[in-house]
Image 1: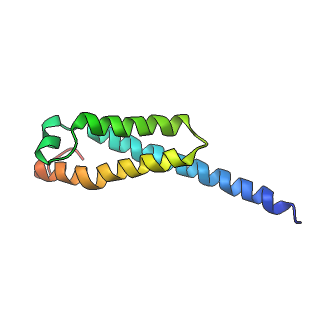
Image 2 (image 1 turned 120 degrees about the vertical axis):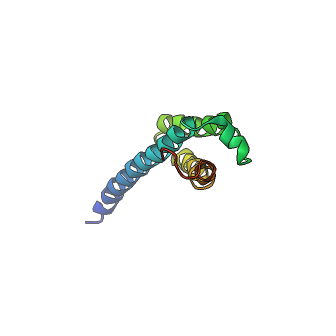
Length: 103
């Protein structure tokens, strides 16, 4: 009975890691696709980093998340970068286009 706890712990940790990886890849991919479909002039108009910088940050984080599967710190950094884009830059771009954008 005492040896079942480590086995259960390993299973739970594995499923949590896989879930976190899937959520991380989806959030970063959505942010990257949104960034790539926007006009570059909009980023300058709202006073944030240029489109290439955001695409580079999110793209590198996405690539590192997919390459370093077992290292979840990179995944958390990627989620943070994608959420900063989605919660700060995306609403500014949407307000700039009067809310009539594709997203």
